[in-house]
Image 1 (cartoon, one colour):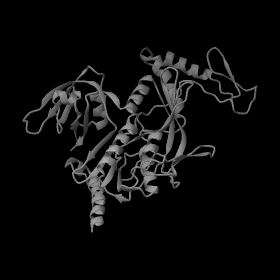
Image 2 (cartoon, helix red, strand yellow; image 1 turned 120 degrees about the vertical axis):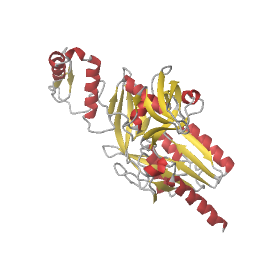
Image 3 (spheres, helix red, strand yellow; image 1 turned 180 degrees about the vertical axis):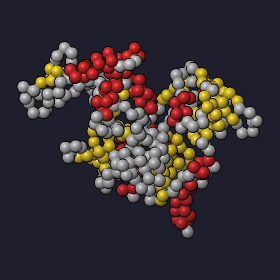
Image 4 (cartoon, one colour; image 1 turned 180 degrees about the horizontal axis):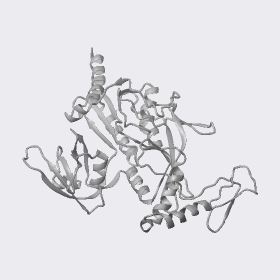
Length: 416
């Protein structure tokens, strides 16, 4: 995902966020937004439409060439009867954005823009089950409580061998998820093998609207409070604040903040989360193209600053996740355990366009409070612990084990 800093509609501005995860390889622009700040030269004009309209003060590119190519494709392409004008148009806009040579600057057509917004809101249409890969087989990790998968009888540990009679062998987990998701009120059939059963069974599930909370908490019996944050979404800060209240009430021995496989999200949410540990000073620094910098300061909350804290990161921790991890590392408020983070050091702004499309544009780079630019290199944890395929298959978690050891060892030493 990205760090989203602001979301700008055709006229009105709102907010931005961080993006680390390339959710879709799409780009371009749904309209021309040519700057008027360049050097004026009234003799330089560009034709940009078949009606030979002109834009002043720009280099002399003839935009009629676009329509020449359009018409040639329409007339000469071998399967021209299969050409969709909408696909041609949106495809050209994707190409415009991709010409920035930046994987995070992309154009999303209305359908893609809606899916992207749904991801940020934590809602989608599907069956409501967490799935993963175990022994190269798509496996149900856990059906979500009250969701269609649970109601249809899907269980944790079920191995999915086919989706709508199509084998899952060779599919990546992302490909399998795309096949399982679909419009609400439509059926999907999963062929599963369940431990203790001697033959496969078919489970038909009617898809529904799924709401996934981005923050989960677990107050363990050993006195450690675990906060798992899957995204920095619309609901994150409210849920995180609820977790803070619970922590202050229960006074745990320490906190594990699990940011593994968290691709990022809203910048302001990352700043608020880091401020729960950081009392004052910058949490993140933005670097703009013209050399201008902007610092974002902690809000003075600091309610968790005295708790022993360990942050879990891995190669899927990016963007907003890295902002939080980097800030707490630089201020010595947490130990980092796990694997090298992704390395997403840029900030994107969302521009909502007039037809429902969205343009996501990289507007700045960001640095940690100590001035570390982590783009393409990531953050190295203080305690590097690998999570192997064998660990996953056997349901072991040595990274979490190390985090708990650091907290509980501290507790034991304090008692001596």
